[in-house]
Length: 141
Image (cartoon, rainbow, N blue to C red):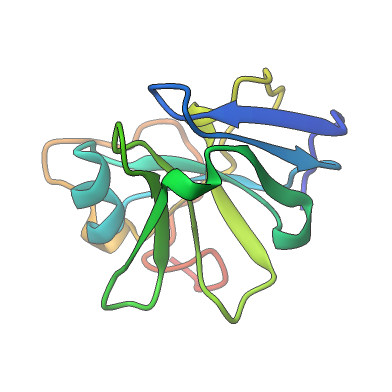
């Protein structure tokens, strides 16, 4: 896992009513092309950075967080006011995937790979030379 050297990261939703921080380094950054992420974001893919769940905390607006659980079991946490998706996770996993674009702290990381490319939209060609996995990064692609 490649980690960002920064030890504290802060982020927020579009309206600013929800703020969060991550204590300690963050790990892998990847682009997810799964149907759930595409439908949730309205974009061709979503870029996530992972962190231990224990390192992530809402510091403002936690009462405005709503979650939606997809059929896959993945939960997405979003602001009820503006709709910004801030993170996704599976209850049984120790990691949380933070929507990288919601981070206010600059990152030196770049996406390392693409996942769930079996579900990617037909009108977007991946041309960055990064590894592409049909499913999760642990599945050869």
